[in-house]
Length: 412
Image 1: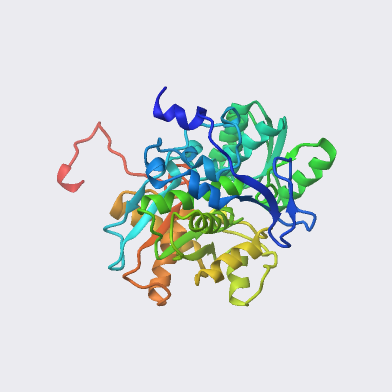
Image 2: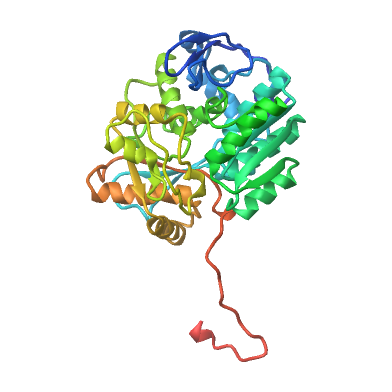
């Protein structure tokens, strides 16, 4: 048996103790099908972290295959046979050299290397694995594109029926990708939260399992692996700041949870990165709430941005996003579409990395934060590129050569 197969097939001790309401702290039984708490808030998976620290060492971890399942002790899947995997590799940290604006280290965590080309694979892999463990046969979710593509792929792998609702203007490649991987997808004349209402209504009528962002406990556990992985890649240090494209915010919340769990298990110290929630100026409910000192955000009206993945007018985990940002000494920042497109072109032309619009938003936000003195030029900063730039519309290319005419190569 190869080392790679071992992560997916070896039985390992598990440490889940219970589920917990993120708002009230009320405890719920583990190993049960769950959506929201009785208070209507996200449920979080809790572990015996001291026991993890005794059972797993950094040295043991270093010998495991480089995929997200190396962190099995920090994950909720009890049985190896329930793991649903499409090859979730650890994603690289790419240093920006030509584009870097400061004297510090500017790194991009390139999540485009994951299955279905986005970081949504992390959360969905865990959610679908838990659906398999619970014997769930049908699920549904709203999507701006990449989450639906991931759900379609993993549900196909697990033989679970998936129904997906997306806004009318979802990128065509995402819609076709979802359909091609066997899910049933519908376009909706509304935004992602409107699609989410359809999922909730269908849950009552059809009985499907709702896999909407933070409305079940396990996608956050998959997204948490970004924080586990990042700390390990930086030799169990954390960066000075993380710029994260924030729509529903599962990844930001998940990483903040990961750092707390790593400290409790003895893997890192008390230092935390400043968490920076990056939004588009055309849909910035977290930025508005942060600046106004609010605990919750109000729904953003007439949301519009080229960065579709962060076009989320209202997030159920708003209070968790804002708490992580504030507790870390971070901030929320918005950039306009022009700056996002300019940032994508700069990084592509100077460093050869084609970022998705949401990822480019983090670079635009980094530039803005430097200019405003919110970040030091000497800081080590990690930007998250959450999907492949190839999944989005790119500028047209119109140059061509006519072979029936002489070509002036000096003019090319």
